[in-house]
Length: 97
Image 1 (cartoon, rainbow, N blue to C red):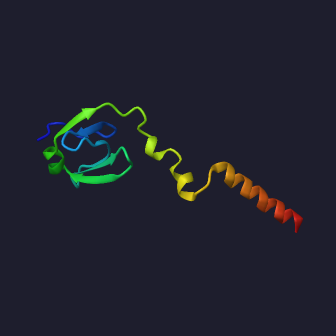
Image 2 (cartoon, helix red, strand yellow; image 1 turned 30 degrees about the horizontal axis):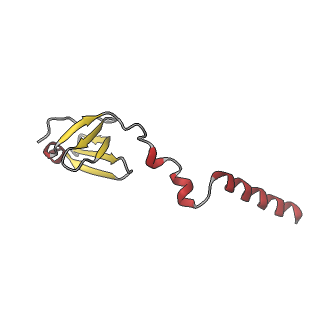
Image 3 (cartoon, rainbow, N blue to C red; image 1 turned 45 degrees about the horizontal axis):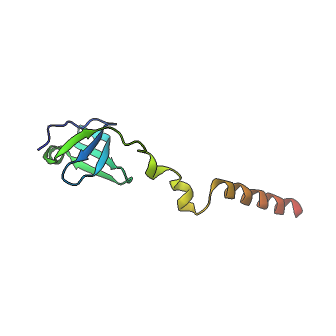
C-alpha cells in the first residue's frame, strides 16, 4: 500500500512492475488520476487504486520526452525537409501550367 500522494508533474515508479510514469492530471471531483508512462501510454486510475499500488517517487528520466521526439514525422512517413521539397515541386508544377 502506498502513502505517496499523486502530484501533477511528478514521476513515480511502480515497484512491482518497474514501470515509470508521470502524473499528468488529477480530477478531484471524479477522484481519478491520469498517468502517462515513459513509452507514451496514458492510463486513468481511481484514487483508491493509486493508494493500493507499491509506488515510490523518482526523478524525471534524463530523456523523458524521448517517446514524443519526431513522433508526428514518423507517423506520416516523411521528414519535415521532404514536406518542403514536395511543396516546392507542387508550386513549380503550378507555375509551368
